[in-house]
Image (cartoon, rainbow, N blue to C red; front, side):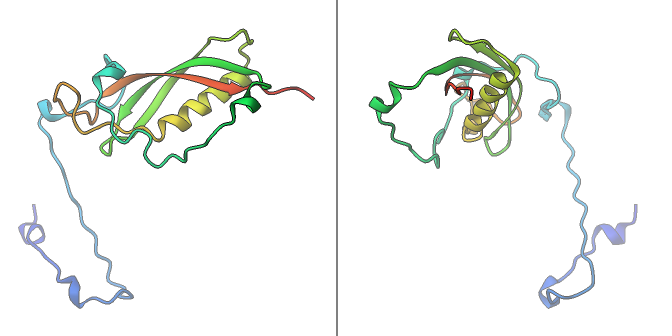
Length: 157
């Protein structure tokens, strides 16, 4: 190990933004085994109720719907489930989407894709609090989510 390099410091106040001298740093983090959370495959995901959700719909534009106009349209409905990894900022990284229809429609690839995209869009705005309801940290945990979704039925030409 080069001790001189390990203790070197730069005073960046004297450098101008156009200075061609590159400044690189290498930061290494080491965690003991009990401090590590496995972020690979989901193992025993938590139930949605175990997670304390915060600002779940913060920033989503609220759309008002006129119920009389909706009564003329037909909808397909389904429950979409996914397994999501809680990131450091509380956001979710989701996978393993499954669609279970609750309407009388036929589930083809196009309809399945529409439901999955709608679920991904809704989960983008969901945030977990830094602690679970039991007080444990939420970051790095897997959670199973279940979303009931209703989509406007597309009519053919």
